[in-house]
Each structure stands twice: as C-alpha cells, then as structure tokens.
Image 1: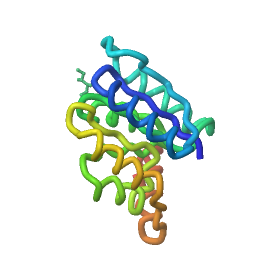
Image 2: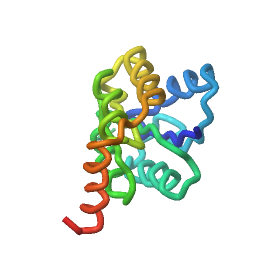
Image 3: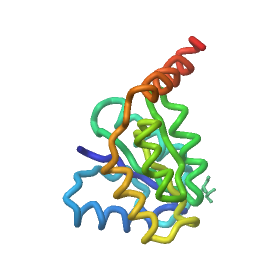
Length: 148
Ligand code: RB5
C-alpha cells in the first residue's frame, strides 16, 4: 500500500505528525505538500493527491486542512475519489467498512494529534465490507456519470 498525503497550511503540522507515524509503522507514502505553514489554496493539494490515486500512482490518501471540510469537498470533485472527512474513530473505521473511502480527511485545527493518529491507524487497517455496501458505492459512480 502506498499512500498519497497532503495538507494546506491549516493541516501542515498534523500532516508532519502523520508522516512520523507512517515512518514508524513502515507505511510507504508520497507527500504532495504543502511544505510549510505559509498560506496555500487547499484545492491545489486535493487535486494532486486525488489524481495520484485515480491515476494509480498511489492506493489511498490522507488530506488535512484546518477543518478537513474544504479539502474533502475539493477532493470529491475528482471522479473516483471517495473522500471522507472524519473527526472520530468510529467514522474513521466506518468510512472504510461501509463507504470504501479512498481518502481520509482530517482537521488540523479540530483534532488532537493522538486522536488523529488513532484514526489513521483505523483507516489504514480496516477493509471495505462489500456486499450491500458495494451496491451503494457503485451508485457514487453512477452519480458521477449522471446516470442517476
Ligand atoms: C484555511 O484558513 C482554512 O480555510 C482551510 O484550512 C480549511 O479549514 C477549509 O475548509
């Protein structure tokens, strides 16, 4: 598994903590920026991470902005992206189980580092359940293709 990760200035510090955790746990990743706390536009970062996933360069992603909201909205504009903004462990687990989320979005100004890292662990180590959930996930694609 190779992760694509990215953040804007509001998520930069948490992204750096996530990278340390990934290094400690031997998870491969590519960092698509930003690389400082200077202000940047989060859709630019969301686009880089989202395209890395749909192009097959990376398997899944993690995006961080101040709230997780803006960067998730932007990422979800890319066909094939299922970005889930989560603020607790239950959602971090169930975005995988039920939604087959391929990007976890978090708020660097919302979460403690400890909670965020527990969420990253759940997100990376939970499988999609398929079954009835697959039918619903397939409907995301139908919506993208304006077939619903
Ligand atoms: C940037 O100030 C902030 O708007 C951004 O990080 C994010 O929270 C947007 O949803």
